[in-house]
Amino acid sequence: MRKLFLTACSIVIFSSVCFAQTATPRWELMGGYTTYLAGGEYASVLPDGSMAANPGQLPAKGFQIGLSRSIKSYFRVTGELNGLFGKEVVAVEHLPAGGQYKTGYEIMALFGPEATVRTLKHFDVFAHYLIGFSYGVDNQVPAVANNTFTSWVYGTGVGLDLKTRHRLAIRLLEADWIISHFPKQDFNAEDNWRFTSGVVYRFGH
Image (cartoon, rainbow, N blue to C red; front, side):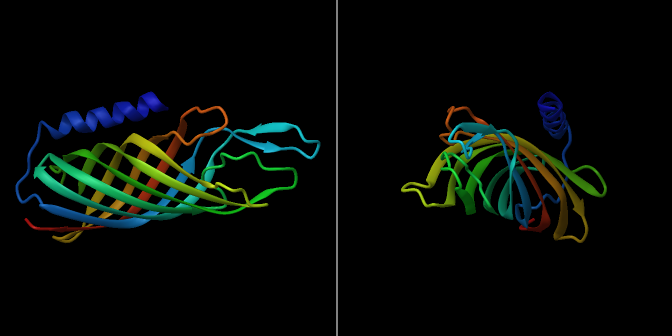
């Protein structure tokens, strides 16, 4: 799955340097809805007091705001900000017997280069490599003294925009594979998946 995803990113990047298009918007402002699946194993305490690993994804939902600046018709730099909310978003603490997660949120900021293909009649395609940081908070019952965590994050992604009017586009899908390093019990990196759809306002031709 990862190899297929990285291959798709490479194809978009290669294609973008082979084509150019006039009337490229200088700025693109995006707002949308995000589904985030945080990966990795997290631990919990069973009723008998023993530890158990819980493999799987920690789902969260929220918003995404992005701003891109075009350098060439096939290249731009982009910054993205996410606010993500779920029952648990980090899950790095061992819960005591009978404990539970109540609410959690994560703030993630990313920045990096983005290759674009604008030569299609109805669509723009893009791929990017982003790096930044993430701040996560898990509220638990019973409460723990330290429930906030910060991690560097980085990853790759691809996306598809549908052109509508001169200044508007619909982001049908942006899919990103993101790596984080929250201090889980085994200190391994977490594989996270982010899926976003929204509206793009294009200006400054």
